[in-house]
Image (cartoon, rainbow, N blue to C red; front, side, top):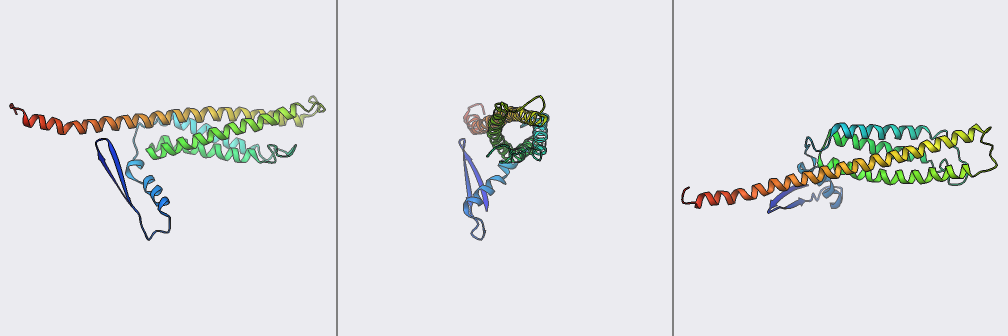
Length: 218
């Protein structure tokens, strides 16, 4: 599949020629061609700050791995609780995947990768909210069990502490995802403005040449 981009008066027209011999449907071919096109995959230095994105990505990865390590010690206390739904595992996997994308977006700042990392962080923010709700409900239920002796039952104390830590991590993950999303949106918007400025300059050049050619002093 070949991709051709044509720009005229600020309007970009992308022409995609499908490959009839390909085993993939046309929609998959179009998405693949757009993702691998030079316009989207060209690395643009300064698009995002590598230091900031690396810090965000590393923290997200660490929290994801830590959440996974809490999984084996998470028991099932009641039907459809955090332990039974394996929340630490899939929530940790999401944190880790989002962190990897945030890290890569800063080191390989192509518009396509930054946009993908932005989408991943939005998904990560949604999962973080889900984690806050699920862990918060479990902490509330444990604390409402009046028949537990919290001074002698260290098991319940440890479980409550683990859930509280998980809530804090989910809140931090939510803040990091929102922060990265804001930075990514600003980067893409600034890139679009720069392209518009360049396009305006290119559009004005023919007019300037025409004025110089028709001027009596030329």
